[in-house]
Amino acid sequence: MTTMLASPIKPRTEDSFAISFAPLSVDEIYARADDSANGAVVVMSGMVRNQTDGKPVVALEYQAYEPMALRVFYQIAADIRSSWTDVTRVVIHHRVGRLQVGEISVLVAVGCPHRSEAFAACRYAIDTLKHNAPIWKKEHWEDGSSSWVSIGACEQLEESC
Image (cartoon, rainbow, N blue to C red):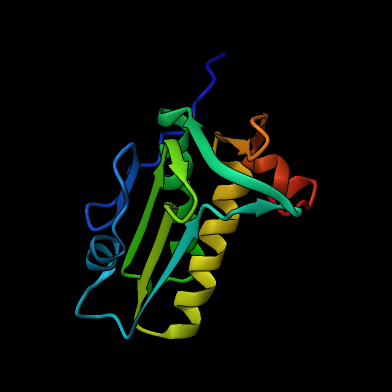
């Protein structure tokens, strides 16, 4: 008896996915999501904030299992196209490494002919990424202590990470 493995999702050439140590650019992500068929491009920018649950944060450190994270990104794009068939572009880029307060940690952009679908697809992308991607963050506190948090655990536990 042979077991058939599901073929891996392949990214579309018009989409863009990355895990990067380099700073992310809103302008670059917007340009990658832009298309002449779009009536809307929705961009979601996740940033390092200065506190979590009132406790002062000085930095975050992100790590990712890149091959699996990219497969999750590809699957998100495939799911989006199943639900919102007019989507023209999906862009998901996430930083790794140590980031300071105010730096962008993730950018998600969706291009689509209509704004309501673009908003819905962008929200789906970031929510699914946070729940499914193997990306972890270490919060560095003002008092010198730190702790690791799985981004997915934040969503599953409904915590405000």
